[in-house]
Length: 194
Length: 237
Image 1 (cartoon, rainbow over the protein chains, first blue to last red):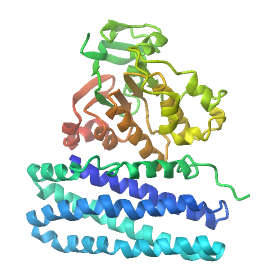
Image 2 (spheres, rainbow over the protein chains, first blue to last red):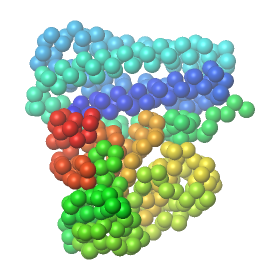
Image 3 (spheres, rainbow over the protein chains, first blue to last red):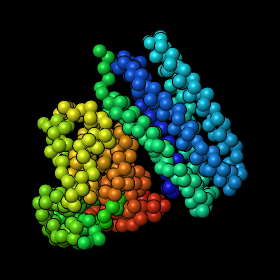
Image 4 (cartoon, each protein chain N blue to C red):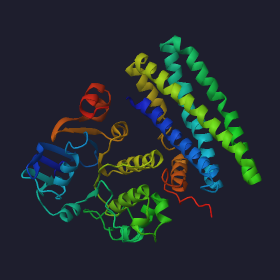
């Protein structure tokens, strides 16, 4: 695996872990095993709203997809679909954010909608990442040359450490999420329905 | 001063009649990050334990900071700036989180005090919320954070993590990898054992693969990453 692909793959893994935590929390609330922790839910939604938008998708759209399209024009169709999904991300996250606000305002009455939005959002993200991992990455490995990868990696790392965000704010946000998500997924306090 | 912080030369170790390590050569430089790989039962933990004085090799030599420490007591090797986070964590379950951390506190062998109690709690905010809890009241992820935090309290020059993310959920595993990366970037040398080979090669400069107690690969992690045949052959992935 080259370093540029490692970065993309690592960001997918981070997002998948956070999405999985969100669904774990939703399951817990649905089965009455836990009560909602709105600080945690808000943090998770903020993470999945900002990290893909600010850190991840630009790497794909501006570099990986651009290089791949140039080297293998037949990829245009799948890349166009992925770019369209990136553009639609804002709307999807906005629905999730609204559903969370409503849930916080209405209490139990707002849960069903939030739960449905969370599950739909996660399913769409997984489908999207799966397409990138299973179709685009293998093509990129096959068609891009070492010089292309070097250029892509240089672009990825030009503005500081891509793992952390410009001011390490996403790094801290991730640590906070891990500190709040209940076990066994995180190291936060045990869920309590009392 | 030796170029190497820790090295093993022609190390042979047995458990009873089982010959585990066969003439292993291993070395790590100051500030270097190394991935120690191999399938289960190939000798990774035995190599670490042999170098740290937890198992006595029957032949060969272990040197720390250039000094022969073959068969030396573990505490002596630890005082030379080598910290160990063992498989299964090894925290003191009857002591609180705070006690576990404070009992380990000391300057490094060169007097450096980069990792203080406050810095460790700042890096592991969850531990700060659990200071009064006993070690046995912690989840697996919290225990691993405590073990790493305790190791950092000794201000080591080398941190060895055996099965760094064993049994941890993906979210916590990722946090551990992030911590390992930060430790590496702070200049502390690292030797990490884990089954997640992709994560391991991503955070290491060099990789060593053991097969049946013998080194079959010792080289650049990036080169290993690009050699899927070698990975499949020796690591089965």
